[in-house]
Length: 420
Image 1 (tube, one colour):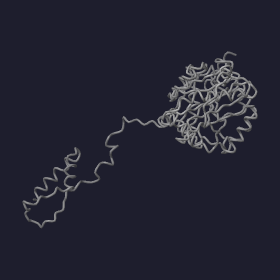
Image 2 (tube, one colour; image 1 turned 135 degrees about the horizontal axis):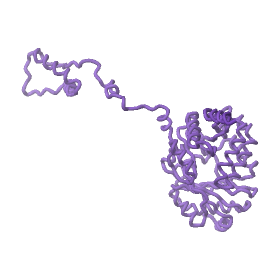
Image 3 (cartoon, helix red, strand yellow; image 1 turned 180 degrees about the vertical axis):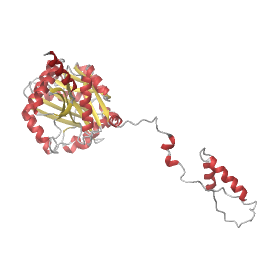
Image 4 (cartoon, helix red, strand yellow; image 1 turned 90 degrees about the vertical axis):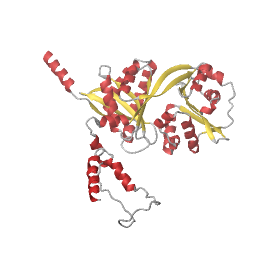
């Protein structure tokens, strides 16, 4: 019996790890990994994982069908699992971050507790990097206190891009803010015609490096007919309502502020808001938050959650001033495809010789000195006439100063003296 158990353990140890797309039979293992990953943090995270798994089980067939052909929802659920001997060791889920799919996002990584997290996680991430060739940049968001995840991502080439702080405003504070009247004379609803204005606001509100990594274009702020239908169905199923608007500056003909709030009509989930303000109009933070508070008063009392980036310190200062609570601090990390190129083909520069690199700069044949003169032969040059130097002779003298041509040029000069 002991020999059989030892043989079984050796077989399992020798089995290679297989990474493949998610299948329906993996849902039970994914649910177990999700519960183990979130249970160590908060009960709220575990409940969120359970709801996500219920949604995945309900719509798995449709999601799999949509992934087979090009469509706007082709990559709504894209994930891979690591398996060893029919045992699920980890899962990674990724999705496009922009419409051009030049930037992809690592949504979540779940790993088995007893497995080698660094090894399995690195294999899953590298499989995504090698499989999704259209991705020039990868981004992800991780909690600053999750040391294991930070070590995994840094080991695979991710670097800090920005920091995000998530805030929560209690219903009592929202009711207090809603008593004021916001000073927003040019508050307009959002439509596809405003995509260019929102794109300019988005690019102006973030540093150049973040803007380059996100790589958003004007069409990222437009909603197609199919997308509008999908959003309507999603809001009807989840019993939510989305309200958005932007502040227009008529003198500059630009958008200087934008908000979007997702409201829960059932009163079970907190309201989620997105807030973008132009750096030159930071006085809009109190006005836009007051507008969000007034909108939330028409729905069941729930706290309001929103995020602020470290490159918008005025927003964080105002949230601290009114008494909002910090609920999470995360780090946005990015990885360029240059890491992938260096890993796929490593070239050592130690064995490369300089003559091999500069073969194109070596002369193809022996240089021949020469010149052209318009004077008849044996005719003396007038002392009043100055002869301009020949450019060809300058080139020859320059080449003779070169180290590898000097030995060849000296015999030529000696032959020329004998001919004279």
